[in-house]
Amino acid sequence: MQYKRSSLLFSEAEKVIPGGVNSPVRAFKSVGGTPIFVKSAKGAYLYDEDGNKLIDYINSWGPMILGHAYQPVIDAITDRAKKGTSFGMPTELETKIASLAVSMVPNIDKIRFVNSGTEACMSAIRLARGFTKRDKIIKFAGCYHGHSDSFLIQAGSGAITFGSPNSPGVTEGTAKDTLLANYNDLENVKSLFEANKNQIAALIVEPVAGNMGCIPPAKGFLEGLKKLCVENQTLLIFDEVMTGFRLARGGVQELFGVDADIVCFGKVIGGGLPVGAFAARSEIMNFLAPLGPVYQAGTLSGNPLAMEAGLTMLTALNNNPEVFKRLDEKTAYLENGIREVLTQNNIVFTINRVGSMISVHFDASPVIDFQSAKNGDNETFKKFFHGMLHEGIYIAPSAYESWFITDALTYDDLDFTINAVDKVAKNL
Image (cartoon, rainbow, N blue to C red; front, side, top):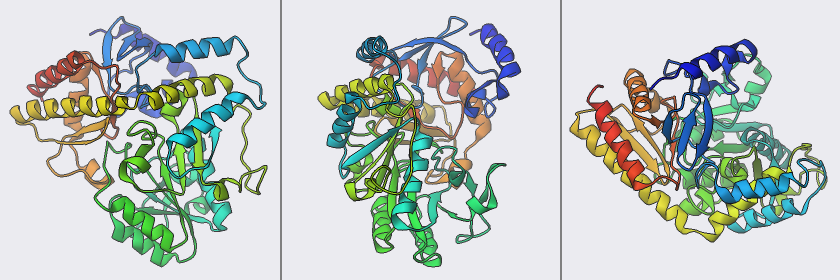
């Protein structure tokens, strides 16, 4: 495949956009080469500026659960745009999608819409601190909750040390209130609670990790986190920006039967438009202004175009629960096919999957946390990525990202992908 126009467009973009991209992973820094510039998309396929057709396994990092340019969503956005694109005032739409979301997700009474997953997680932490009157939070290495200062923290020198900033611009003062834990390690989490008694406002976690590849929670891990939070009067926050309305109608809470105190959403809830949300039971949500003292606001929150897209998407999922079964079956088919051809080609690998999220790691050991994810052979991944791209398959340009399956994929698409893996594996 040729990417001359994408290369030209990237050169032009670098002159006026930092790094030529508006989100770092798009720059292909971890895999090398030039980013692909998309011209359009439909169903399971991307069409780039050079005229190439690619089967898409990113799907805008998750929201295109029913495929690109899903017609009911496109129609709804088009009709709504004719009535105005932004008001900064209440609309009936906001109540409709809020009522639907609350009816679909366990253990929430009220929801507030924002404009991104970052904003949702940032607001959830502020709310938790205001509600508990505590300052510290626990997050997990390898879990990404957006680029808010509190979340850009790396490990300290030991299990119970304070974090240190992982990005210039994040202050030491902010970092000292963020404690870093190891994913799937309850003893590590317990030690943090013991070392910081009555100081921890919230524990935030991707209940199924998607930002170090797809990593499932170990048996009893989520239940253990819930128990520790209850014992320490700490709020448990599930970051379901990726998993919400994707892994089940009610997300991970439904899938694993573990209730969180606050849940953050994004991706699917916007139907492809920029939307985030956070939700909880009434006693917590009523701490938000204008009812309570915790301030959070946004002129574009509840934007009518985004609300219309999200309402249409959630309605489609709510009315067709068999979608989740189909997604699981298609992803299992893909997993089994990839597993078979990589094994036949004597490739060292591990595959993780939960529902319609899946990742391939080039390491024989189980991938259960950020450290084990980093042990993968990144040079092999780079070759795999570019090999798949050459075959017309677009996967995440990073070894630390999940693939997201769309219901628009046919079994012919899946077979094509498995055959592509077989071809690429022969040259790894």
